[in-house]
Length: 329
View 1 (tube, helix red, strand yellow):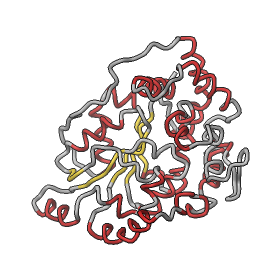
View 2 (cartoon, one colour):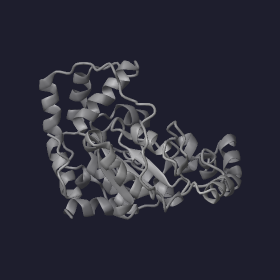
View 3 (cartoon, one colour):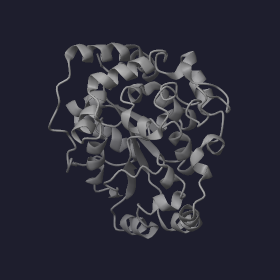
View 4 (tube, helix red, strand yellow):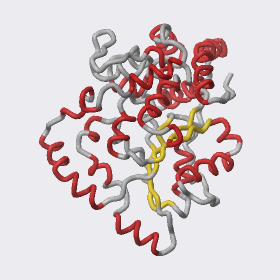
């Protein structure tokens, strides 16, 4: 494994979540009440067996729909729960999250009736990119199975922008945001991993929010959780450092990486891999509610070429880590 990977592993595991996680310090009356009730909810509900952690606009909703229609799946919330990456939710304790999943008695009854394995899970595609989520998941769901879909980062960025622009949530043109992000990310090394800092007290540009020590890309993104979540279009396509954060706390075989373009071309082949990964037998399933954006806005081909050139070394670093070429230009 490259030296940069070793650096990322050390950086991702230098400090416990509580030391650099600002969410752990919330103390409002509502949150304290939720925390008090959390142990009761934890005893009543099953824990999710799998998480689809990302990436956004990479086919995660489609995969969830197939899983939801599998006879061996007891229940999957349709909406994205975003428990591990939203301050107000994470602060309330695990019990508030587990309420979204079946009661233990329901799973036992399903298995007794021959409808096993009766597993459950969810899809929140920001989990992959969020600098602190891997540690939170490991601390609370150490046995969970993880699925990541990785789409050509240029196409993903365009799709992400297209979706938000059509929703009137992004006023900037694609050209404007590309100019901003290319300037901000110019010094991020291939894969992002070599820029990770080692040591729990690390800061970048005065930051001490736990982001700088875990992400070279996000340390240069706007100093706002909302902006990192919604507007870091290019930073979210630097996949290597995102995977390394998960590999640092989970065994590598626990995180299944699926290349989105392969899923689009031959969904059955990739679904077989996914079902096997989460312990499901093969079954014919369907994507009951496609999430594709019909209205696609045109983007200047020259601008697309610039973005592809930016991602080329990052994609090469990812390919070295995966041991295979994702097949992106």
